[in-house]
Image 1 (cartoon, rainbow, N blue to C red):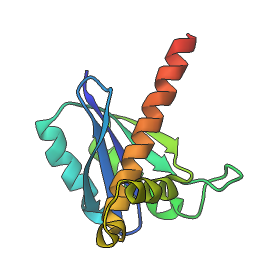
Image 2: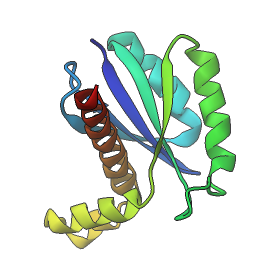
Image 3: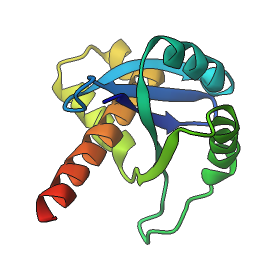
Length: 143
């Protein structure tokens, strides 16, 4: 069983999270400049078995894709070209940035750490991945 990665894609930065090999726990991995994500993934996957990538899909409160998709879609296409056999899944990321900021605040982080947008992006990726794992577990329990 390979790891699952999650990406919280932003215009400038992308937060990346990963599971353990048993796909139980989501952990923040890093933040990368968005234009360097594919190269980072190539290096990471050369050293780690990755089964799938979950990409945060920004939607409005009405459930339609937000305008942020204009810079997420090209990255998704690049990842598909670089890893044609890898499973890619889009996953609703509504409110993850707010949840990430709240989690960082509640962790007791200092003001400077709370203002680190890269940290917010990485924590958002963790929230996306943990939510994805929980939804998958719930769906499997219904089968």
